[in-house]
Each structure stands twice: as C-alpha cells, then as structure tokens.
Amino acid sequence: MMIICLCQGIREKDVRCAIRQGACTLAKLKSATGAGQGCGSCTQELRYLLHHKNGSACHFHEENPTQGGPLKKTSD
Ligand code: FES
Image (cartoon, rainbow, N blue to C red; front, top):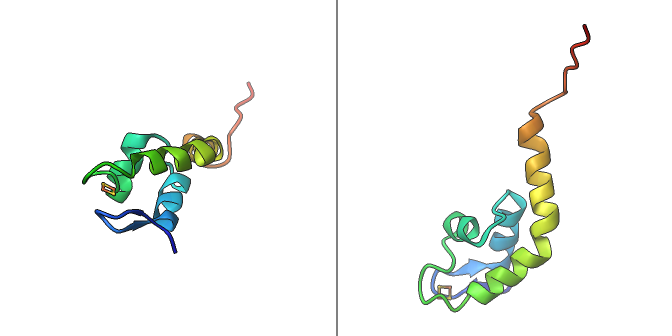
C-alpha cells in the first residue's frame, strides 16, 4: 500500500477514490482527502494522479449529477 501524503497518512487508494467521486481539481482533492495540507511535498503526486485520472473522473462526475435520472422529453 502506497502512502501519498505522509503528513496526513493518505494512501494512494484514498486519493484515487476521491478523484473517482468527483474531486477533479487539486483544491477539491486536497479538501476531500486532507492530503497536501501539511508540508505540501505530496502535491506533485496529487497532481500526477489527477492528471492521469482526471478525464474519466470528471466525465463520470458530470454525467450523473447533471442528468439526475432519466431524461424526460416533452413533445408538444
Ligand atoms: S506529505 Fe502531504 S502535506 Fe506533507
């Protein structure tokens, strides 16, 4: 198991999970996990993970909540 943020004891798994749940910016990721709020030396790692996960995470994130269920088409 890989620790990303030693200061807060945040694991890579936690970071990936937060990204999957929609933390698609560095700021969101930091506040969601608590990582990067100590010495800051894990910021690079966080950025790396974001960069590699961001596309699909954001896509996934935006697809569901905005639609919020089956689309109703009103035809008139
Ligand atoms: S290692 Fe993450 S803030 Fe220090």
